[in-house]
Amino acid sequence: MASGSERVVVVGVDDSAHSYHALETALDLFFIPFKANPQFKLVVVHGRPTATSFLGVAGPGTVDIIPMVEQDLNKTAELVKKKCSEVCSAKSVEISSLEVIEGDPRNIMLEAVERHHACVIVLGSHGYGAVKRVFLGSVSDYLAHHAHCSVMIVKKPKAKPTSTETH
Image (cartoon, rainbow, N blue to C red; front, side, top):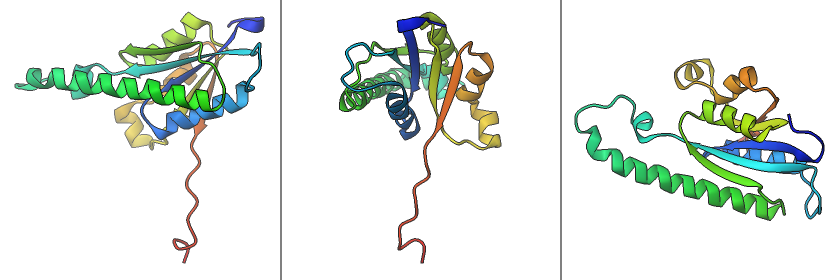
């Protein structure tokens, strides 16, 4: 863990409302806008899947679409970076490092925590049930058990029903 004025908050983001909500929550809790010497450094990490992992098991004809999938994953990564920059800018918080790393998000986030000597990692909860978690895995669950720092899992509040939905 980093010490003194070098405390680092790592926020894991994907292209979901849950992860952007986690980023906003981290900014609200750990950062004071316009402070000259912030107490924390912000590191934002996007784990970009590989085209082959995104496609699953490769079969005949899969090779032909890999370049298109790569292009789409790169475009998504650029959109994630842009959105994170906008969120931080709107809250007047400077990003120390904004990284897009290809691979398994669990390993990427764990390596980022170690590389940056983070004191806390912040992740959004997708709210998967037990069955989906078995098949999809849970990055937050994995990090809660393996990271050598505090892990903050942020749940996005459910939308409140409107007056027309309650009648």
